[in-house]
Image: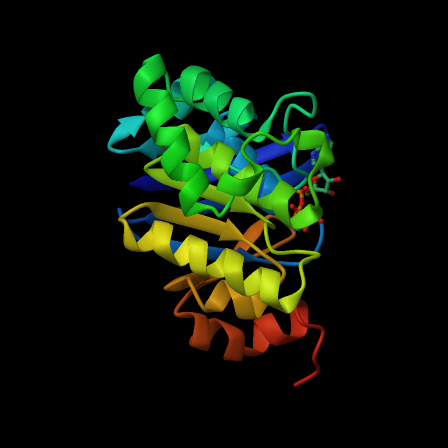
Length: 237
Ligand SMILES: Nc1ncnc2c1ncn2[C@@H]1O[C@H](COP(=O)(O)OP(=O)(O)OP(=O)(O)O)[C@@H](O)[C@H]1O
């Protein structure tokens, strides 16, 4: 589905992504962890085309997308949620979804209306359909962020810290929704600091530190590794 080949990104003298190589097979759920400022969101921006790589190559569904703009990648099936939800505050929940489906996914109107209704149901947002996005609670803003990403019809779904700030119960509900999306065959890459939520969904974990990929593997092995415990969790072993 996705291959990163020695991808690097620098802002002036600051290297934020440092030679990252990674493959994500179709249908897999991969978690990305790492300390604040490790370059996780930047990596998402490089995958989506919101930022262009300084060097390296990105392949999506067998196609070199390294120089393709973000909109082309959305239309190819890359959907994302943002760490800070960015809905159109003055539009209703349904209008927000429809906008994503029509412009991000390029679906015809009738089809988009049908798909958006389905996504509202799937994400538990149906009762909020006619509410203004600007009036939503934190949980519902997060759900809307997920729903908007789904409305673009993604084959590859990138989730950026979607569980942070939620109560245990809210977090469980969100995890159930993400599990269902994954079970439907969508490839997922999920950046998350709420580790128990993340590891209850993903099959593989990648660790970023100072822009470098320092480990990729089964969640149990990664969480048990000395390097991760020292660098990420700050636990002396
Ligand atoms: N446009 C930019 N210009 C300059 N520096 C940037 C830019 N975007 C990000 N950075 C820097 O790159 C580093 C990585 O940022 P990034 O947001 O990718 O980290 P992160 O791992 O997602 O952090 P967090 O867990 O806090 O969200 C930080 O030091 C940040 O200040």
